[in-house]
Length: 192
Length: 192
Image (cartoon, rainbow over all chains, first blue to last red; front, side, top):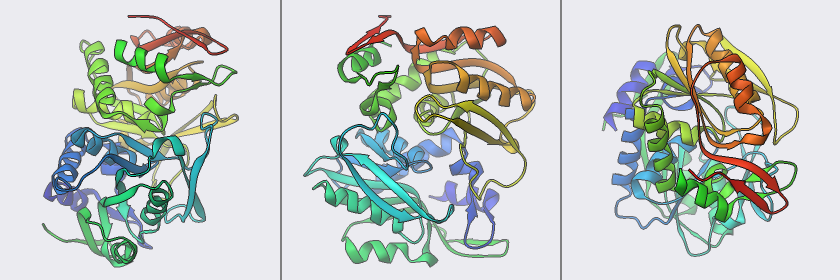
């Protein structure tokens, strides 16, 4: 998605240690036009895939998932990282190592919001090591649903997440911007 | 907003202690049609108010804020509750007591994403005691920006938040569903 790629080139910052700051585009401030276009881009790329529901993880996955859900007209569920007191009843629980926060992050989804037999598209802001995507995929499997595809706004190809997901699931993976290297101030992104 | 009111009547649950569960509508699962309609409703209700930017708080404020930002074509910023490692540089920091989690919640906004002189609309999922809205409003003021209005998806009129905001700020306040009482299983919502 060239508009996104250009924005990351202009505003993205490599903070070192493989951490990309895209707060002005994805993680803190959202541009309505670019965000809408992200939803359209995901909907186009998964147009041939049957999708009943989108699953994402709070916090930064919510925005791209919502605009995609609106485009595809399917409900969106976001995994919570803490159990709110309104989350009563059984939950699916998985953990994933947190890249930006350290430690393990919990991912919680109320059992009532994932149904056996449904086709689930996972959307998140980043595909890096793939551990969050795989944790979400395990929740899909636990629910008896079917993983239909995986979409990331930004992929860091050098962290191996695509291969890690494909090793377990034969599904289409779409990334709207693919970063192949970050060295010092230089962020290398594949053109479309 | 009658469609929202009907959904809360059908699916909302009073968990006791003034806690309303609307996980199936707002806080965990999102319905794309209803969410889009929430954006349209806020855009209509604030049509006569100059708005340069929307400010909300993670997590549950993000979805209604995003769809409103898309309708009004203005950027959306969400206050973080923890400092991510990508949040470098100066921040505006306020705290608010958490209704559903207990304790104090931090609200952090990078100084780079709020500008002096801008007109800021605050959107959140709930207007209850008004403490989160007031903390966000203090951030607006700290930035030298102007509070233009306050919008809540759901207002609990009996917790006094509207009066608490109006006591400090002479701005329009819009709520799409106004709950006047919750007693046992009975949730009383004003019709439009």
